[in-house]
Amino acid sequence: MIIEEITVTAFQQHTRIIGCEATKQAICIDPGDEAERIVETLDRLGLTLQAIALTHAHLDHVGGVAALKKLQPAAKIKLHQGDEFMYRALPEQPAWIGIPRSQWAALGFAFETPPAVDHYWTDGEKYAVGKLEFEVRHCPGHTPGHVVLYEASERKVFVGDVLFAGSIGRTDLPGGSMPQLLSSIKNKLLTLPDETEVYSGHGPVTTIGEERLMNPFLR
Figure (cartoon, rainbow, N blue to C red):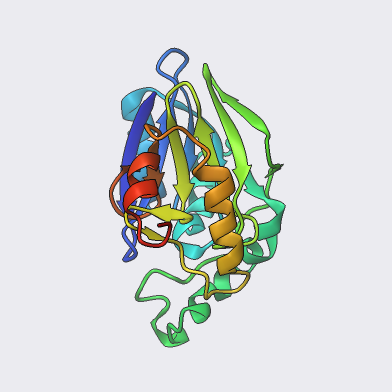
């Protein structure tokens, strides 16, 4: 598995390019910004982008979708339908976190309405990227339509903002729910093998075993 990480925006969000070494097929998980840099990375690695794979629709994870789709029109946009309302509301999302409208342009948050979703994730769906196979697990709580992408043979899970090293996702934004989030972590993440590497949308890589033992929100 090829994993290329590009950290973008003031939120230090990890956009990731995931590729199959054998076939050079790839997805981009959560392009928050810097679409041209993403395409340059794909070209450098000789990868073909088949999908823009979204874990959820917060602005720091989808802010670069429109620009990336224009540069890579064949790539399919994939999102859970539970986050459709949030995705369509991208131009207004800066207000949700209290940023004055007068500052949006200067901060890079003057978003256009994003392009239509091509495919809606479903819980338990299997999605192939070359010889890689991702299981889609619906994990609501941070947002209603949040999903994680688990590749069993590689023992890696890409969790967006559900789980972090030593922390969990916030639940105070529209559609958030602490009981749902804790249930998602317990039933969809802590059921994975302890050695599974956890790639979060922010912060360092951790493991399921580490978080099971040390995460203060889960003990």
